[in-house]
Length: 259
Image (cartoon, rainbow, N blue to C red; front, side, top):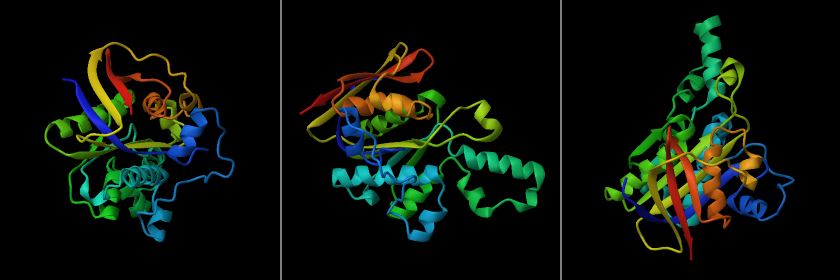
């Protein structure tokens, strides 16, 4: 993979106790968790009844995606997107498996259509009215890095701007014994080929990612999307080089340039 330098136009973030990118930046720089933080995102892209029906994973994905677009001053309907999730929604998968095993005729149609891995991407394109391509990516611990590679590839192929969203929720039931994940976590970046103050250059190289020790990484370490957190810590000013897990024996080396 050749080096690709892109501009980060907008950032969105949400996790338990840190319901915005500003809250996350303050926390990284020695602040505290938000005392009255909401327990669940409420994405304004959807109508009120839809917000109530969407699973938490979809809610957090849409929340950070819209926040990143707003920060970038970009119309959500105008951007191709990449949605990266390690597991999709494990709570719904657990429900589906349990119900199919016990009483398959009672499967909820709503939960069924939310069980697909690209549910968040579907809600996003419907809610925003976006007709551009949307890609759903899953690669276990390398999910966010591979989502970033996909976004960079689209920019290299001619796209002017791409929205990247990483998110995961909690694991429950028997699946939790195989794929541990706690809490709710989402992060989004609007990436472009234009000039800007916050720049990023990424290269795929051989190696292993170091142990993550930053403030966000400690706070949300139990979530499956935690491998993305060192990048967000660097974007907040806590470092300028990040190694992201990109698969067995491979890392995505990301260099950040501020200003």
